[in-house]
Amino acid sequence: MKAAAEAKLANPKLSEAQKKEAQFELLQAMCEETQPNSQFSKLRFVLELEKSSRGAVMLVEDPASKEFTLKHIYTKDDRDSANVQREIDLMMTLRDHAKIRR
Image (cartoon, rainbow, N blue to C red):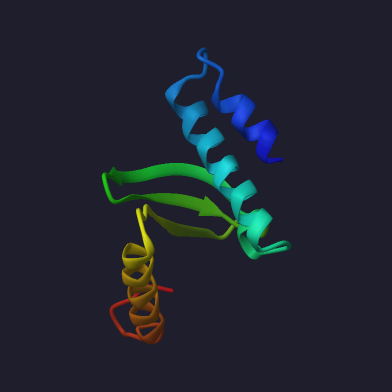
């Protein structure tokens, strides 16, 4: 799956929308390598909502057609990875917050 996504991404004739979809497929393949049978591999890319030098936010859909936002955070080193883990831990404590839509 990873090789197919990389080959697709290497095609210079892809539109911007096709490139974003191929990037998402590569992300899924990389996740599947480290976490086989993860829920992430079942998601479908819908739309890139925002992109910055630190990451991207995408709209994705699960097999039941429920939409979610997915945050992909770019990391350079272990310190960045630790900061991302702290952010995830903080977000997990907010699961039942009244201002967060479910």
